[in-house]
Length: 330
Image (cartoon, rainbow, N blue to C red; front, side):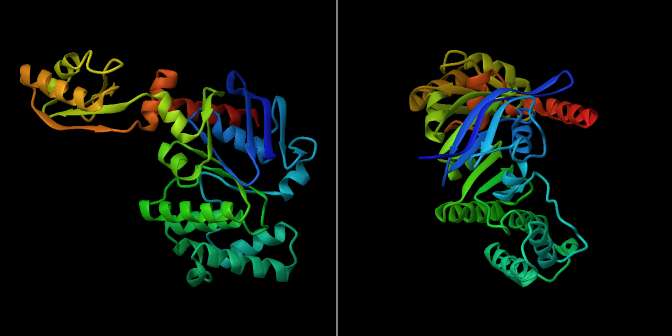
């Protein structure tokens, strides 16, 4: 297949903060690539570069064959974008927002109106088309924001955590909508912190951390990098948490991980059923009362812990630092 998005050695720093340290990735036409990573990993910075909102310090990026720095106007004509927060005008109606975007995309007044109606029907907001956005729910605003990126019928959609703020029902609706777009030939690059989202939507996944692409493959391949299941044990009393973790040493393939806030110990295990029986025996021997115990497939945090040695939540402050550095550089 032909790559429609090509990124080669892209770097970007904001002062002393390195957001991207040399990232490579390729997105085949008519496919979905998920850029998976914790807050502060560099995902949003890469999307901003691809959408021509930010110039890279080094490397080359092309969309539909156009260089994002040298041919930014041509790039903008073939992309649609949706950021983490809905970029809409609350004083306008849903229809007016979409028509405005259409006119800004150099559509005629008639074509902008036609496309706006098509998009409203596509995102299931035709009934609310003539209401001001300030009356919309968060999920409705998110759909309008995504719809705005579709008015010009872009070849490539760049979506930065598109399900942020959506409830489970709206998230499922959005997933189905994106599948339909890809089936019709669109190409999607989306950023996410959720392995489930990558599982549902992406053919390929690139894991990015601290500004570097550290792994790539299908969702299944990534989970296989983290062998086996995960044993979760939640103790009835927080006072028993450390004793439970000590008892579970050696049950799994790695050291137990403690989540003190919820009183849980998690252990990667290669043989799930045997490990479960062994864990029950060990905890019973030291008389630790268990509130919940079970096996599950690896989560995003499990994959990241295996690949990087830390979890996704540990980079929350770094996201703020990166944004502050970017703002200061403007």
